[in-house]
Length: 193
Length: 362
Image 1 (cartoon, rainbow over the protein chains, first blue to last red):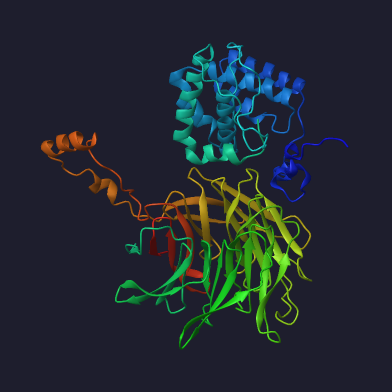
Image 2: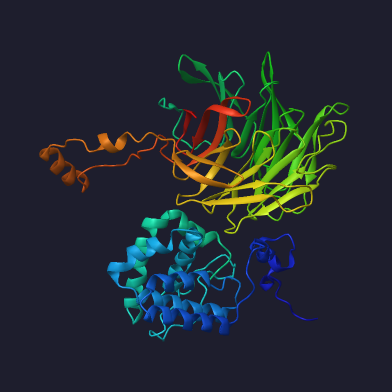
């Protein structure tokens, strides 16, 4: 007789009716773009950095948000996050409001605002590259529910402090323009960045 | 705009409310009971209580013509209450569900009602003469999660449902012997029971909290936890919709919505005040709040210096602003048309967590 400890069996995984087996992909809209690869994201990054150097921060931010790899793999998403944070850090405090107003208006402006909000939260949730010592991708909830966009939070006063203050000041200005609705949509939207 | 008529009934959340057709009786779901209020003068006073449910009552609806009341609760039951000379008599409905019942509405024909539930089914209930009870048929596929809200098409056959799987769906609830065959429409021509006439997911995929058909029944609006309102115009059966318009608002999420004519939607939710949306097939936008903001001008009252320092000493703050500027003081759960004629709403009522029922002029 084999000894099975029945208490350790995850019965939710065996129950097709259980919410643990909810098909998360059913929440992705049909309009989701094709999965972008890491090299696509790197190409976009080069283009965006050129615009930033060329003195067109508004165009850079607009492009980086329009090319977000919503359907991409994790690697592409990481590369793109780094690009977005570079753009955000490359824009001076005094210009933020003017650039945001430009980016968040016109055709597709509301989507760009929502997309930027996703990047702000992702940037704040992921460990800063320079702080190093943090364990990567530790989920806060014991089971991987798939519903949380929160990863191990960057609570330390490490090298991420400066990046965090940039993200927070962008957050403040973006909430002024896009409202609390934009924050709510970061939580509901399954097209993660 | 006339000032809204506020009825502060009690200090407890109102899960749902419903007015009788003469607007003299008001039913509100309060904890495990439904309370009936009668209008006397310009106030509503408690006249009766419908007791029977063992857990929180989640929804209540009064049929406008027959006056019958249907209630459903987290105890997995629904009752139909009929007025008799000795009081209200409940009849148990066989729902056959193993999770809480979340939402109930009479069909416009009043022959049927639909109960949404956490068991991932919608029970469509009708009266069987031979056995003298209410029985149900289940709409099951392809619901993947709890049904949070329902709305009937004017033809009493099509039923819209919103769910926590972020989809709004349109089903046929045609029951032989009860319903007459509906006119063919953009939603479908032949409509046997459980035909899926539409399944919609918006890009931001929030839980759906409110659905409504337009007065003609040719458009569907739904709102959800992603702070947006989506309007769908179907084209033909089995075809993708002619237009699906999403209004992403900057507000907190909206819980409930109604149509006012074909070009206006009124919705309310966590911002504690109703908002108006205007539009048509080519585009929709938020037109603004229906709340008259009187508080802003009159809010900055003259405060004596003595009073200010006294407040700071007592409470640690100069001014105690514990009151919201809106009429409702907490989330609005339900919004219903109050007086309407040919699809145009003249007034509507809202209820919410703050125990108030408010009647607004549209």
